[in-house]
Length: 472
Image (tube, rainbow, N blue to C red; front, side, top):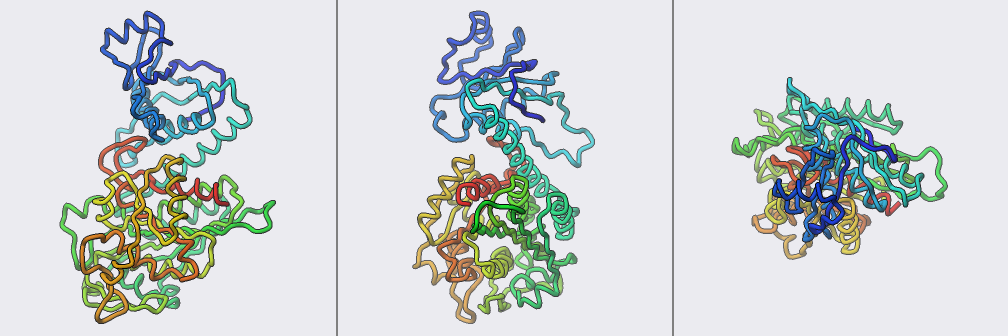
């Protein structure tokens, strides 16, 4: 769908109503809305003069996603009409940003494997912003289209089923993407993992028929006005499927485990967008790609693994595998000595219990960095909640036979203890520069919400892009 800054009138005009104020409507329109029982909240189409009314609830006007969500809901209804274009007015750049995101993110559906595709005649959106600078509007629309396309690419990767989206599939996808955009893509195989002594990562991978990969993406601007570029490193958990290993998941919990690669896919989306935007910063993406399966050679509860940084890990549950893959990836990422280190992972169900389906957990040792990220994520349209690290919880993942245990001795606060476990593999000099984002809740939800359709959402992509833009 193409969005442009234009005075051109679409076949249908979008009209916003806030706080049930319908004074801007004609008497005929008011009479029609009254006849249809419209009370000023929600969406409704007036066929007589081809006007689509979006009523915004006053109680939600201060919520950062209200306009985005309203447009996303509207676009689903508008796609059912036999129209090719719509038009609407905007009063500020922020309003334009939210309108574009609502339309472009709300327009996505995953129908790749359906014979009957979702059809729509709607192709053009005209935004009329007479009081704003044309160049600024054009630039913003172009940026939002890049970011939204990256989010939708992330969604498509996550939604692709595990029979197709294997570690090799993700590797080939990102290799082709790197050639298209022009960033560096280094693919490291089992031999590299062995050479780097990534015993935790390798253990998780043992029972899969698909080889594991550590993929290192690097973007640097070809020319820059800055003498010292900030360095951002993003690490993503990429379990293309997770059955739980020998600590086998119940069958109901295996459904949606294709989404256990959401962290790695988000990192791909982040690098994709930042490279296309030409951001003046050095960006690295580290993907830990593998499967957690069962077999005679699977790693077992009671095994003791040696991670890349030399720490030993007692395995008590093979379904706590994401933190083992990330442990070695974070150790590798630490060697890059970044200004900011952020990992993204569908790590714990406990985070979903704590914050609900729609909110990512933000963790780390630097209070200001956590607060900054939370504020930036909110401005980008993503919900987050800070879960505080507690030094008293550290003893819960200590082991009698190794340096650490991969699960805590108590289930209480286990989203936090999982995050603290990851911190054991971040270089001490980087702990104040590190954030852990647990996206287990919002990454994949089997019910549409806000700008997100059924399935994958691309959680973390917009928040991290905005973070780089503000911190670079």
